[in-house]
Image (cartoon, rainbow, N blue to C red; front, side):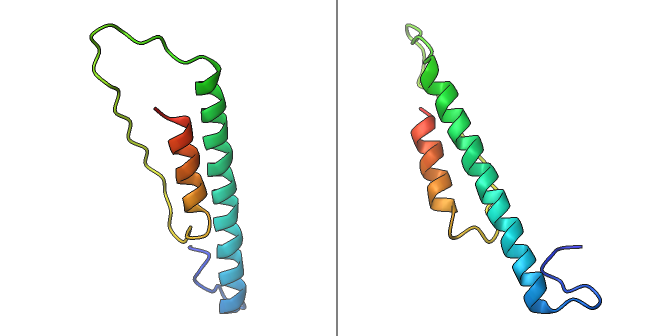
Length: 82
């Protein structure tokens, strides 16, 4: 059951706090993942292939209720990826 729906005996404010904590945990995990990706990519950039097309990368980031953190996460991915 989603944390934003109060359970029996639980107030809406308590459920909202739990949802905020879960969102902050997710944002932190995404930030750490982006940092590890950036570090691993900057450690050994691939050699360009002659005549190769530019690489296109798509990143799917779950961002429900992530207004406070999503900008930093996107910035980290942009810095880490070509």
